[in-house]
Image 1 (cartoon, rainbow, N blue to C red):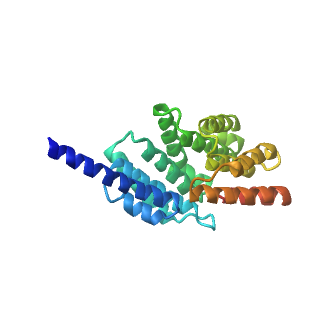
Image 2 (image 1 turned 135 degrees about the vertical axis):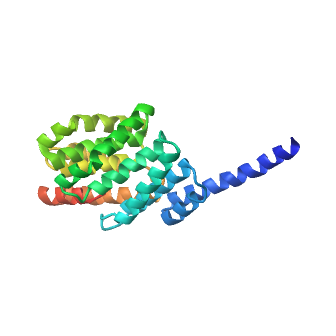
Image 3 (image 1 turned 180 degrees about the horizontal axis):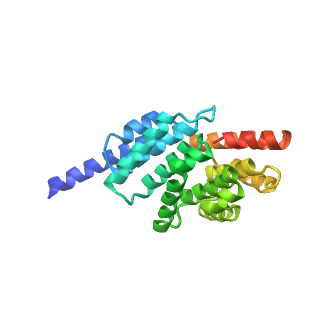
Length: 251
């Protein structure tokens, strides 16, 4: 019994240190390292975190064109995690994000045929059924509704059940849960601007200002804040068409 207790005492700090190492790598923006460290043990938690790191790397690219290879690899890791645990919250959420990014460069017809958008929404909806207070599922769905409304117009949005009203509700719930998360504010402000920079200017500016006022806790949030600053400047200085085009390209 003493031997077992000794093993437990010595093993726990080592495991904790390993977890801290990949968490720290992610926070500091060393995403490749975070992926390698997380994958050193094959578990749903580790695979989902590795998927998250790959997607963070993808969306952080300065040209706003996330490499398909990173997205595909993130999708694969998330699906592997779900094979181990079909109800894993983080794996479902990261898979939803990966699928939404895969749909991004496709035409509306291609996206509908692929079914990425609907599968992504189903995944996020499922997360909220199991975890109603999941900030990022609410944030994801807020953007999903706005993007469908922008790309599909009123008819397309009606077919898929998307609306600005639903987007607003999800955003408000996300903010109530995590008011200091810059990424939630940024993505909502960006998506509103892309939808209609004139009609939703006040609401978009409020979200962008909220993103800028947050305390940055990671390199990813710092990138989001830099983009919020760029878009805010463009919103004040450029024509509506140019502003909407830029907002639609940004991540």
